[in-house]
Length: 317
Image (cartoon, rainbow, N blue to C red; front, top):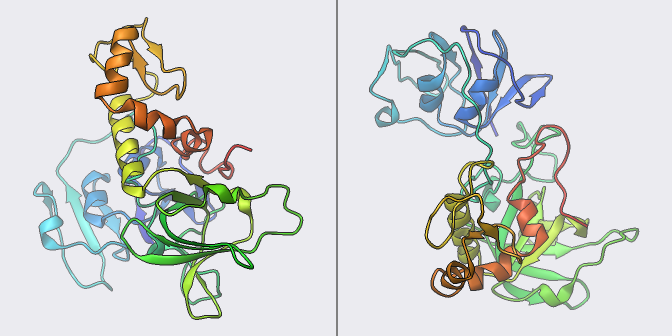
């Protein structure tokens, strides 16, 4: 995948953005707050017009991003916008006040709508030597493929057929390392369940099919829920939780109260009292969702960004 380079001319305070020998890796608008004066930024899968809008004055953007930018995408408050072909650069001067203090980056649970960390199969790098720059090329990059199992075969070796977030079908075949200490629980491999694979790559099998070859089973977890339902559960939890560290509110009545008590099974939702808990359990769908949310592996996946750029994320043992 291609990257883009932004040279920033206005001083901004450096914080905790992941860095490499090629500069600061930027994956979202929030990461601009972590860029120091004169640092080179590697832009990954973010619309160039969005960065031009948020970047400091006279930001120079090399037009080689991963997402095409159409004229209608350009914010109206940007002047001197030059829309050329892919080989040319853009110089944009946003009409906005100078930024002297970077905004605080709010810590939230990770949304599965984040297609950088939870990509479709097509966006994965190949495990073969191919021409071009790998998309996930930093040691601290974290990504996870979520797919719904549509077929299971346990003959000779474990072979699954699954459907990713875009509805595309792929094969998942297991070739476990003989020295592996962790064994895959095949009882969870059922049609309709969702499989999560950490750090997968595209692989072409000898039979001509395409998918993911899994050698380390510790990078794999299965959740007893359909993919669409898992996205719904994650979306509802992110909306309910908001910024981490803020006062908790009752899932049923919405009241903010320091005396609210968390659910004893999942530990993610809070209630004022027994009546509110019963209401949330029966009428707000928590009874069904809690069965999925109580899995420590799923709860860990909600915090996949914690420590990003410092070490690799792993599922709990």
